[in-house]
Image 1 (tube, rainbow, N blue to C red):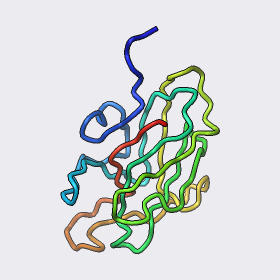
Image 2 (cartoon, rainbow, N blue to C red; image 1 turned 45 degrees about the vertical axis):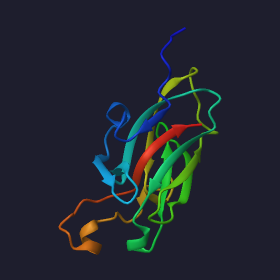
Image 3 (tube, one colour; image 1 turned 30 degrees about the horizontal axis):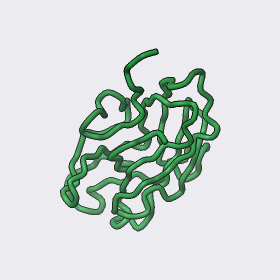
Length: 157
């Protein structure tokens, strides 16, 4: 038995460099409330160790709904199989908690590392991604990145 605790949480600015894979933009800071976060692209990969008793992943998220007039949808996949879809994971530009169920996740062993992918897609399973947020379209700030959702933390519960 190992004395090392499993890594069941990602906090941007603390341990994100250890568990966030492709699809994540550089860290940013929300000056309104002091939150460190990362934007995703249309999809982003991450890895967490998941106990068998785990029931969900909780995401602390925000999005550009105030500018775009639409919430950010979010789908959770592991490995390649849809686990959960939230049509309005980030319904406003305030930070909120989005809970995504792990009911159908099959684990080989307790606290096994699990590879997850989140996708900002309107219709889950069809690969039809929602329109990306391009800041320059709304702010005229020369930022042409194609952004998905802002994530500050991910936790296994």
